Amino acid sequence: MCISDLEHVLDFSQTKTSRHVTYLKNSGILKLRKSDQWVLYSLKEEMVDLVQMIFNLLQKDPTLKADMETFNTLFSNRELAINKLRVTEWPAR
Image (cartoon, rainbow, N blue to C red; front, top):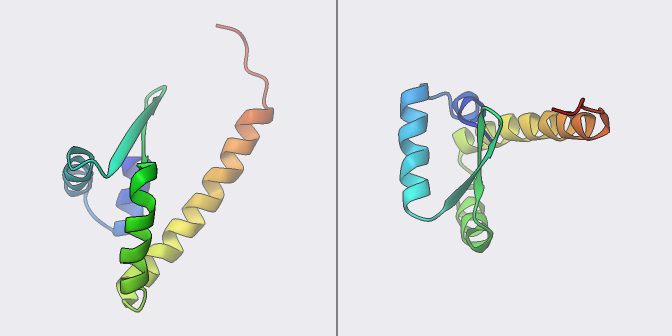
């Protein structure tokens, strides 16, 4: 996800979101990938199980449930966009 996606899911300002993403990146939980002007963040593979256990413990929290619903909607739309990009032929640069 990019910062703007995370802002939307968490309902945080861009500054607050960026600061927290930096904390997670510096702690070794997140990795980043640049794609044109976008910086996309994701969990490091070795952190997925740990984060899943934390989410399992917090699954009854109403705020987290709402955030997960927003995330799932954004993720679904992102997957559709990625598939569309894959089938679109881009002109050579």
